[in-house]
Amino acid sequence: MASNHKSSAARPVSRGGVGLTGRPPSGIRPLSGNRVATAMPPGTARPGSRSGPIGTGGVLSSQIKVADRPVTQQGLTGMKTGMKGPQRQILDKSYYLGLLRSKISELTTEVNKLQKEIEMYNQENSVYLSYEKRAETLAVEMKEFQGQLADYNMLVDKLNTNTEMEEVMNDYNMLKAQNDRETQSMDVIFTERQAKEKQMRSVEEEIEQEKQAADDIIKNMSLENQVKYLEMKATNEKLLQELDTLQQQLDSQNMKKESMEAEIAHSQVKQEAVLLHEKLYELESHRDQMIAEDKSIGSPMEEREKLLKQVKDDNQEIASMERQLTDIKEKINQFNEEIRQLDMDLEEHQDSTNYGWKITEKNTESFKKQV
Image (cartoon, rainbow, N blue to C red; front, side, top):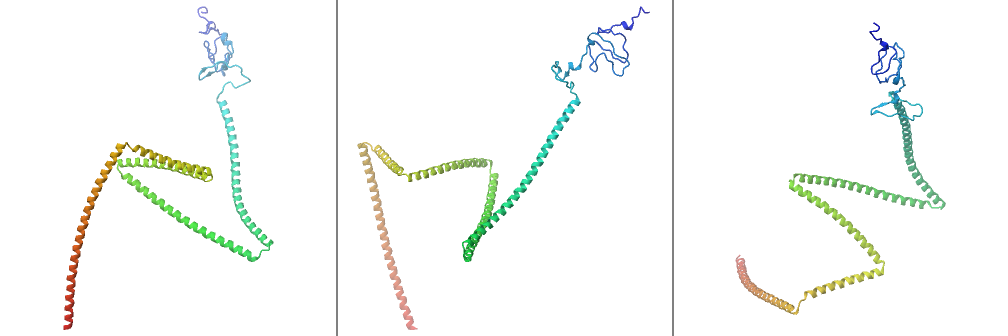
């Protein structure tokens, strides 16, 4: 039986190439091939097991540490060398919690510091405002005291100069009258200001009403008229801008002219130069006029024809005027004849009227005699 069956101690381990001295207890997991456990170093038993250390050989006999081959999210990294001093090898949750607590404590300390500074600044600001108000009140009081001091100084000067009481009263009455006049003028100015402000408000209301009416009219327009209105409005704004620009240029030119006139008024040489320029301008104008007349004059034959034509035109015009004059004279004679005839008719009518009056008077006298 012993020769036919092999003992368990002589059975080799599969794919490992490492012989075990005995069958491991049931509480220990056997190691396979080249796989290395990451939870505990090789050669040690799991805590709480019934067996002790197991014997290994070959590759498994070397002490391999997990930190020699750290695993990250991007894969395996190289070996870290040159570590100075003892440092934490695994940055776990407790490490980051401690780091976060330290940063939170630093932030809390800084926030408390800033809060204290803010409170200090607020206290200083409140104290500054109270001091500023007190300074304003003290400044008003100081002005009042300065006025009283000036009055007392003037009174002392009057006493030192032996001024009569009557003169002091005259000065007092004069100043009082002046103050009363200024008070009345201030009241008048204040009343006028209120009236002007009221007038301005009424004018602004009227302007708003006119704008509203204009907007209503524009809304009621047709689309074509609205487009024309907008185009004309844009043109108007453009022209107003150009007008403002030209007005500014005109103002600048007027200022320049006034400054140059002032300079000329203070300089005799410049005045003479201006007179010479004016005379030169007149002579140049006269020269241009003579040149134009010379150019308009043609040859003698052309001038002769022009004169003959002008004479003919003048003769025709004179003949037409004579005919018109004859017609007018005939009309005048006709009107005179009509006037003479009317005068004769009027005289005859007056004679008949006078004869009728005479008969009426005779009848009246005869009637009176009979009565």
